[in-house]
Every structure is written in structure tokens, then in C-alpha cells.
Image 1 (cartoon, rainbow, N blue to C red):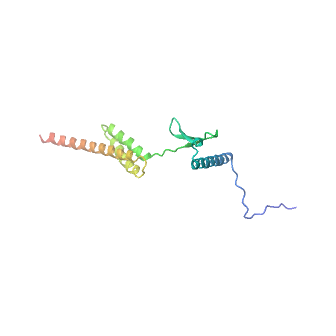
Image 2 (cartoon, rainbow, N blue to C red):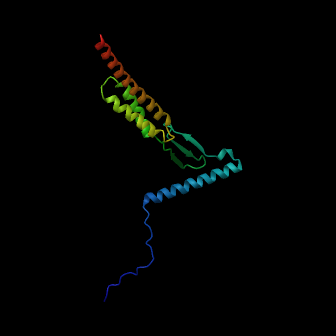
Image 3 (cartoon, rainbow, N blue to C red):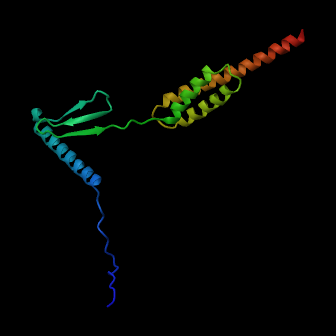
Length: 160
């Protein structure tokens, strides 16, 4: 008696599908069927059976409601952010408010300018990056101007 091993060929094992994947596929099929029904109703001009979108209170998702059917499909909208632009804005604001501290505003102003330019590469929230650059630059100019006036004041005092 010898142990027989299964033949090794080009046969592939069927891919296992878990419950989440199956549910996702079922939801996608239901949504597709509902969209097909909606497009058919629009083509027929049947206004009374059209699906309507209801905006939620938070405004971050819509519910597709079919008045003839009790199913509801929730469509979640992903909001996109520009982290670099937001960081530039926050650092620029910190730079302005902390301008009276000796060294910290230099660091935050330079970082605000750098993050602002990096944030401007993305079209989303580009204005925040621009504001961060302006605030960082204004703080940097303010600090440099302070030191120029300080040195001129010392030089004027020494010349008397």
C-alpha cells in the first residue's frame, strides 16, 4: 500500500469567499438593479415611481430610497483632505501668535512655508496652503524686521 498523492496539475483551488465579500457583492447587485430600475423609470417618464435621495442631517451620506420597495442603500461620501495645507495653516497661525518667543516662530514659520508649498501641489484645499505660506512668511519677515530694528537701536545708542 502506498500513499497516493493528488496529481499536481494546473488545477486551481476555488477561491474561498467569506460572508463580508458575499454581502458586499449582494449589496452591489441590489444597487445595480435599483439603478437599472431607476433608469428604466426615467426613460418611461414615470415620475411617481422614481427613487429619491434624502440628505442626512450630518450631510456626509445620502440614502437612496425607493418608494415602491422598502430597501434602503446608504452611499457614504469620502471627504478628501489636504493634510499638508492644513498643517501649513496651523503652523502659520502658531507662528503669528508665538512671534514674541525667541526661537520657536522661526521653526514654525519655515515649516509653514514648506508645508504650504507641498500642500499647493494638491488641488484640494489649496487655499489653506497659500494662507499658511502667507502667515509663515509674514512671521518670518516680522521676526527679521524685529532683529534689524534691534541692531539699529543698539548701533544708534552706541553712536551717541
